Image 1 (tube, one colour):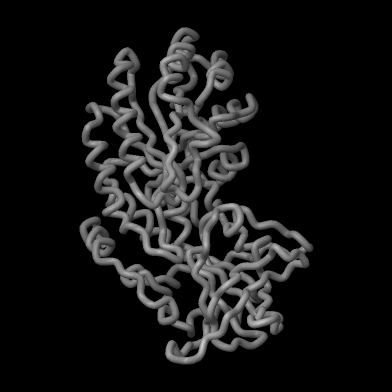
Image 2 (cartoon, rainbow, N blue to C red; image 1 turned 45 degrees about the vertical axis):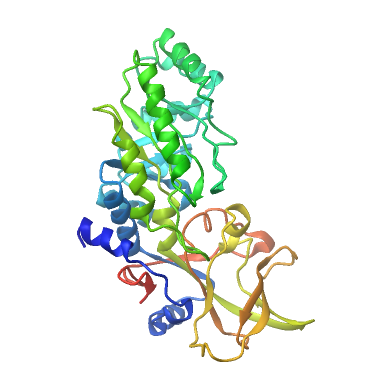
Length: 400
């Protein structure tokens, strides 16, 4: 698909009945080769998501947020597509370095850093760092002439599922002080950044943040502004529909058109690229009738691959693998994880047909902030990741 084809696909995108989206034979082949639970990472879906976002934001450099899913095969695929990378820790620096990524292809976006983290990033060749307060600016005095600072501004959004401006970001009123501190000590300030929140359900806070940032740049015209980083926020479809990406990005492009000439625009997509690229395959290992509901016990739960339900506030679509008659009888059910902790419940109120021990369920949209935050509580191992090329069909947004 070229850019126009991708845009047309998203403009016409619908979400068909989740129970009708499987080529069950493909999944069964994987189950024959791998014990459940396991995740399936589809690299062709990584391609599709990346190209879709790039088509929707044609004048923006995409820096993939490593933290959402740091699988080496995903990073290598994105590198081959020309992606840049958003780093926040020494571990992430060392991961991308081991995969052949260069420091100049990266930005270091964690606003709070130890000195050894700054040094390690500089050794790698990454020279662009985000700061958001006076103490952080001071840490860069001794690196004057070696670094460019991007100052993060806080723009709170009530329309984002995960608020990322509560913990980080200065106010617009504090911005001139930080710029002056840096410049008076020979440290270059080159850009502004913000992140209105992850899984944003509306682009308008981001639009307002773009326009406010542009206004601040124009007021502080003594700064040689080179970059504006608009963060992440690009939503994916979980249980409820979200705006198609071209519709979400259209007002962003309109606001970005007001930027002065010569300023590069960055974005930090994580979820949008990684989320749809992975499913989880789990088995029912136990079944009990408790009151009016049937409890099904799975071999993975919220301490494992479903951890994003706690840490990321996501509710993943979960469907049986076996063919289901949509006109048949469904029953109030609970899906519970395998650990001994009663908090380990994946779905509290879900309607399911009568299922048996050994039946397979599929969790969809499970790439972002799932395996990244999984634990080995009770010594249950994290689900392994199986890498494939063609489980998903981008033409229908469905499993093949």
